[in-house]
Structures are given as structure tokens and as C-alpha cells.
Image (spheres, rainbow, N blue to C red):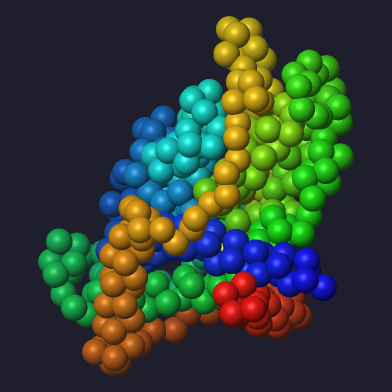
Amino acid sequence: MDDFLQQWGEAAYTSTGFFWMALWAFVLGYIISSMIQIFVTEEKMQKAMGENEGKSMLLGTFFGFISSSCSFSALAGTKSIFKKGASFVSSIAFLLASTNLVIELGIIISIFLGWQFVVGEYIGGILLILICWLLIRIINPKELIEKARENLESGDDDAIDDSKDWKKQIQKEDSWARVAKKYKMEWQMVWKDVTVGFTIAGIVAAFVPDSFFETLFINSGQGNTDFSFFEILEHIIVGPIAAFLTFIGSMGNIPLAALLFGKGVSFAGVMAFIFSDLVVFPVLRINAKYYGWKMSLFILFLLFTALIGAALALHYSFDLIGILPDPSQVKIKDSTYFKIDYTFYLNLIFLGISGYLVYLGFFKKKDVEHTMSEMAPKSQLLERVLKYIAFVCYIWLAGGLMVKFFL
């Protein structure tokens, strides 16, 4: 019983710690998404990203690079630029860049895994974009793209008039009140998925032994670096399965990726695990809300196929030039999540900004209202089930934290 209570406390502490580490990225991403929806006119977005394919891909990649590393906020930002008229290719480039090419992700990877994985992350992110672009060119899903745009047509009432200068609009308090309303809606869209995802991550980290992950990957184990092609392929395919079991987004998965590599999983398998933050069920479900299930499944196919190709290319190219990393270089240490560091100060800053938006949107500007229907069909039963599961998660987390700090 004592062991269970200790693990319960550690699970709750880990869940809240992971969320604390990612909190500022969540807030930043949803603020950016809300601002795009309110201030960026469709005409300007189409000129920037909707016409020339090469230019649109480069711009989508650049905008993703300067965006948030959080998977959930990347999904919201991708939906925003696609809704405003950006091409499907540039939207996918934005999505992949914002989860694979951001600076803070590279810093975390360098701490836990080493420079080879940092190089692999950035080169792999570019490979993911190029492979998706090639697949889209080959398949040419025009009807699917148009249908996805139709699913996003609702909810434009709160956007500013395209004929007005955004530089003037950005100075008006009414416009920022609309941003605040959008910000609230983005959180309403995914709070259940976020709660359940982070809680599961803590439970897996505390209760599931390392040997469980080792059994998922054929011929893995400490000291083994010689894998056949089919063993590497199996690692790459199983990587997304392991990511599904521990899903909290790319940033939170890095310590778990280091654990897998330290236990002998191949470089390709670990890279596939890191890349898999966009091919798990919560992301599939959110994309279905935005674009419909057919497009959501098509995006899943694109990303999973690109993931396999990128991981294989990275493994064999690194092996060819002799820079495959050694599992013995990875040492996992217990994390202190709530220490006073840059994360602490960033969270304070963005919580302050979030508080101002709450004040502006719900107290100061009560007259600014808008309506918005669901962006895509969804299961009402699943929504209710997830809502109840999320409430159970809150009880679990509260109880675990009490056990850890008061018992």
C-alpha cells in the first residue's frame, strides 16, 4: 500500500510538473493563434502563403519556426492560417516546423540526448516537410482540401473588416477583446485532451516499468547497437505506439525518449518516438474537429509516412558518416520541475498576459460578443466521456499531490 501511495504521489507530481514546464508555450501558442484569426486578413494571408507553392512552403516553415513548440497550440495555429487562405502545403509545413524546428526543443534535446539528436531533429523536421510536400503533389487531394475549408467557414463573425488597416485595429481595445474571446475558445476546444494527456503521462512514468518499453522494441537492450533493417523498421513503427501511451507533446516526451535510447532502442526508433507527437489520437481528434474525419485521417497518413521515411534516412545517413550516437552517453536524472529558472519567469510573464486577456474579454468588454458553432462534426458521447474522465483526472492529481506532500 505504501508503494502505491508513493507512486501515486510521484505520478501526480510528474503530471503537474510536465504541465508547468509547457505552460508558457501553451499560452503563447494560443495567443498567436487568436491574434492571427482576428488581425490577419484573408487577402494578406493569401498573398503571403496561398499562391506560389515554393514561397508558401518557406513562409510556412519560417512562421512555424518562430511559433510555439507545443503540439496543441501548433494545431490551433495551423488551423488559423489555413482558414485565412494559406495553401494546404504551407499549413502542413507550418505544423511540422512549429513542432520540430523550434529553438527551445533543440535545447531540451541537447540536454537529455546530445548533439546528434539535435542535428537529427532539425534535419528530420525539414525531411518531414519535404516528404509531405512530395506526397501531396503525387496524391493531389483537391476535393479533400476544399471540404476541409468548408468545415472552417463558420465562426468568421469576430474577424476584423479586411478593408481596415490592421495596424490601427491592433491599437483598439475592442479588437483585443475579440482576441481574448478567441483565446478562451481555443482552450475550451482542447482542455479535456490536455488534462487527460498529461495525467496519463505521469501515470506511465510512475507506474510502468522500463522493461515494458524494452519489450515493445525487438532486439533492444543496453549495449546493442547492431540492428537489421526490419528491426529498425519495427522500432520506427512501434515508436508512435509508445508515444501514444506517454503523449504530452514533443517537449515532455524528450526525457522519455532519452530513457528509451538509454535502454537500447535504435536511433531511428527514438527519432520516430520524438516525431510522433502529431500522429496520436488526441491530435487526430482535434484535427477532426477542425477539418472533418477524412482530412484528419489523410493528415495522419501524410505525417506517419513522412515519419517513417525521415527516421530511416536519418539512421542510415548518420551511420554512413559515422555519427550515430552511443546509448551509454545518455544519463537520466530526476527532474525538479518547479525550480526558479527561465521556465518559472516565462510562466509568470505569460500567466500575467493571460490574466489580462481574461480581464479584458470577460470583465471590461462585456459588450463584445460573438457566436461560433463547432468547426467540424464530433461525437457528443465521446465529448461527455472525455469530460468526465478529465474531472476524474483532476481528483487523481489533487489526491496524489496531497499524498506526496502531506502524508
